[in-house]
Image 1: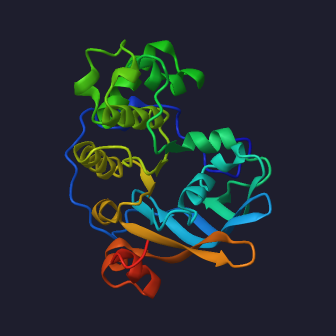
Image 2 (image 1 turned 90 degrees about the vertical axis):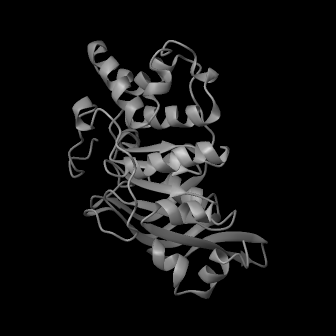
Length: 294
């Protein structure tokens, strides 16, 4: 990035950074601290024009943990997620107030390069969005435009596909169109494309919402495995999924403005996932996780 106060960027890609063969996902220990603070989110409000979509969000994200954002539709989960790598910059009229500190540096400070922010903080979207290119070219796309040498691309593609638990399924058809893959395979390809740039953080916006239970289980297992190398923040409507894979959970709800008939997202509670689902401190959280509303 142009701002030298940000932590030094990782090398664009180092295939040796990750093990060559994915290891089976282990059981998560919700609430276990894996490392230092990656994000420190303080007093964050997100606006679309004059409309305040999310207000006064405060929580931290810890290295190598999975943080889940849950809550009813329209409570600002995806809006907040996109604020963590400045994807909202691409929406006309959107703005963020407050501090989204990444390793102590506000990513919204003047002079911070949003393109570099998104390289370090990658995103996987709700609907798989492979490019109309070959499987190989999908994964190689990011490293290629960042100047990685052609001779290194094959190793990067293989390494990324292995980490996405897709290599064995596609290694003999890398030149075939990515659009020919199944939905679950396409989503894992998009994960491989994201991690090919060696980000530190991977944001996932409902990555399993369009998948069947078998494909969902594969993605969940993959998330647990990837958390050994990356920090993950996931938006999900599936409370069982949040309980299965995450270490920390943030529960969002809405406040209704009776005059304008608009809803603003608010963070109700943030805690260890086990506590959120067993002994939450706020009655609204308990009502949501027990199915009384939402």
